[in-house]
Structure formats: C-alpha cells, structure tokens
Length: 256
Image (cartoon, rainbow, N blue to C red; front, side, top):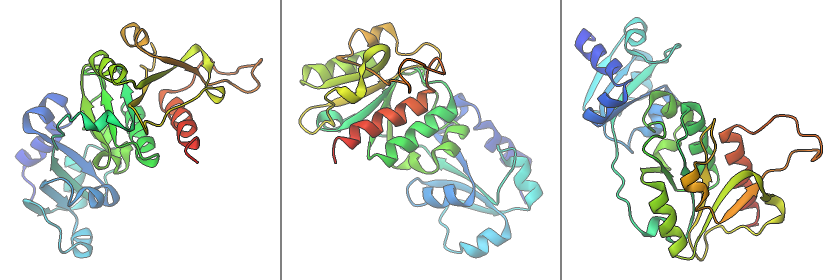
C-alpha cells in the first residue's frame, strides 16, 4: 500500500529546493532505474509485481509493490512506466586533475532540461567525463534532465562552479578555452586540442543569449560552425545541444 505521504514526498522532489534539501532525485522506467541501481544509493523503489518478479535481487532501502494506478499517482511522467525510484544525490569533489589533461564542457546558463540531458548524453558518447556549469544552469537532477540523459547522469560528473574563475585556471595552465560564435573562425579549418597536453574546455552558451560577455572575453579560440551552402544559411542559429554535438564530434574526429 502506497501512502499519501509517500506520494506527496516523491512528487515534492519535482522542485529543486526540495531535491537540494533532501539530497535526492527521482528516476523512472526500467532501463534508467536499472542503470542507476548500484551506482547511486536507492532510498525508495516503487514497482509493479511483474517488474519485481523480473528483478528479485533489487537493492533499495525501501521496496514497495504498487499497482499501476498507484504508480501513476506518484509518477512525474505523463506516461508512467513500471518502476520509479528515489536515489540519493552523489557529491563530486572538485579536483584539479579533473581538467588538467582532458576535454571538458562548460555550460554558460543552459536553461532547457532537454538540452542539458542531451548534452550529457553527447558528453558520455564522446568520452567527456566532466561537465562544468554556472549556478544558473538547470539542475542536473531535474526529473526531465534525468530522463533525457538515459543513464549518462551517472557516467558524466556535473560540477556547478564560477565559470570565469574556471576559465582563468584553464588559461593559466596553458590550456584552451573554445566557444562558438557567429563571427568565429571556421571550426573545420582550425587547430583543435583534445586536452592531451593541457586543459581544453568547450563553452556552450545560453539558448537565447549565447555565451555571456564575461566568458566571451576569456575565450581564447572563437569558432564558427558554417552552414551549407555557406552563402545560403537557413536557420539563424543552432540549438545548444546540436551545436554541442557538432563541435565535440569535430574535436574527437581529430583523434582518429
């Protein structure tokens, strides 16, 4: 039996302030929950009987068998699936070696949950282990972000930091800070560093305003993703996640 208080608690985690206070987040669906189990501590797991029968060794502080109707009342999705879990949020210490010799992303006020989730999937696909973000970037444990990551949330570490300070650390270490601009240089004709010898960070701007002035002043290499054909551009600009995908793919292509 699923109590009203338990439903109220789970649904309260839709709000950032409650997630922060509780140090918890919600994930739903057999694939996502299955991936997160074993990586993050599971506090509560709600599942229908068929799922529990298929996963008899599930480890959680509290396991509750529910009906599909009960699961629907607790779910944060429009179309609830067969399992929902509340996990504890991990804490990732900020260590200098994280950016010392690697390619990282820096998100400058990315606001859309779907974009952040997709960006983390892109980072995961291309072997980027650390993503840095401003305090105003959407919360990585927002339910929509978690669902959109398709499990990348446990493989890619998110750090919320002061980006200008991070940028100065990168540049002082002889690293590169890249960003895409409409007045930048053609990315396909520029030298790109994957961070093998010094830090390399790609800055991704806000969906509406792009890279902030404070960060734009610090970017060492201004890049441009040209349209095709070059003299007949269609859309005014690219979606943040799409721009990230094209940019990171080009960086990694240089490794082959």
